[in-house]
Length: 422
Image 1 (cartoon, rainbow, N blue to C red):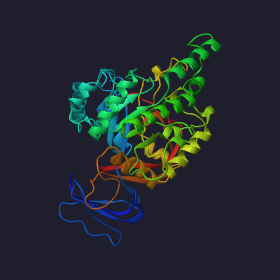
Image 2 (image 1 turned 180 degrees about the vertical axis):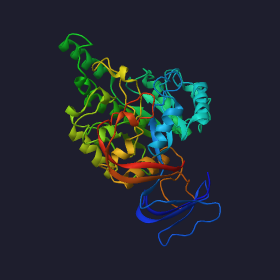
Image 3 (image 1 turned 30 degrees about the horizontal axis):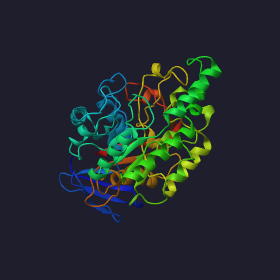
Image 4 (image 1 turned 30 degrees about the vertical axis):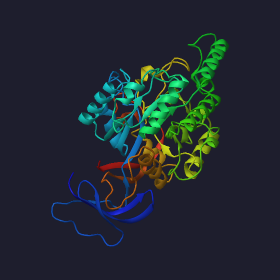
C-alpha cells in the first residue's frame, strides 16, 4: 500500500468523532490532526474525504465463506470481496465446511486458501468435535482464531463432545489463551418443539417457516447459553457466546466495557434490525439459526449493545443458493449472506462510534490481538470511508456473492462504503 494523506474527514473511531485529517505510511497510521489540512508529501496519495466518515476497517468475527466444499454458494475470494465492499478489514471464518475444519490439517489448508485469495485479513476457527483434543493440542495456539463449539446442531451438523470432553477442551483453551465461541441452542428442546410442530401440521414438509422461531425457541437459547456459561466458569476459559437473539439471555452477561470480562457476547445485524424484527416483514430469506425473534427482543439487544451487555457484532454471513432457501421451517436452509450490506444498514439505527467499538475495538480485545479501533499513530492503516448518500434501496442486483441475493433486499440505506487500505 502506498503512503496516503486523507483530508477533510469526519474521523470516527472507538473514542469518538471529530473533524480532521490522517496520514499513513502505507502500513500504519503515522499522524492524525484536527487543525488545518497539511499538504501532501512527494509520493503520497491524497484523498479528499469531502466530510465523509473515516473509520477503522471493521472486524467480522463470524462469517461462513463456504470454502472448501460448498463453492457453489461462495468462495473465500467472492465472500471476502463482499466483506471488503461492506467495510470489513478482517474476518474470522467458521468451521462448518466440507470437510469441516475439525482437524489441524483442515485448518492449515483453509488458512492457506485465505492467504492466497482473500481480499481482507483472514483468520479461521478450529471446530471442536468428539475426540479432537489431541489434534487441537498439536497446533500452535496462535494458529486458530479461536475454538468453535456447537452446543446445538446447526447447518453442517457438527457434533458436540460430551460434557467431560467439553470440560477438558475448555481447560486446555484456558491454559493456551484460546477464546471459545459457542453456538448455544438446546438440541433436545428443539427436537421436542419440531416433533410437536410435525404433529400439528401432519408432516415435516407442511410446517411453515413462520414456526421457525417457535421450534428454535427462546427457551432453547436460554438453556444452552446458561449451560455454556456454567462450563466456562468451571474451567476459567474466555467464553464468547455467538449470535445472541433473545432479551431473555441478556441478564446472563455483565454490563460495561469488554476489558476484564471472562464471558462475552455477540449479536448480529439481523437480530437488531427494527424492520426485520417484525414477523410480517420476514420471509425464508430471514430463516437463520438461532431464529430472529420479536421487536421487543431487537429493542433489548440494541440497548444491550449500548450498555455493554453485548460486546461484539458479527454478521453470521452464511450464503445459500435461493433454491436451497425454499421450503418450510424444517426443510429450508438456515443462513443468510449479510456481510456486504450490514454496515450501511446498521447506520440507519446505530451510532457509528458504537459500531466501531463492537466491530473493531472489542474483537481485538476478546481474541487477544491487542489494541485496535482507534485512529491514532501506530494503529494499522486499515481504513474505510463511509459517505452519506441520498436514500437508496438495497437490491439483489448489487450482490457480489455468487448466491445472488441478500436478506436486506428492499430495505433503505443512506451510506456507501469506500475501502481505502486494508
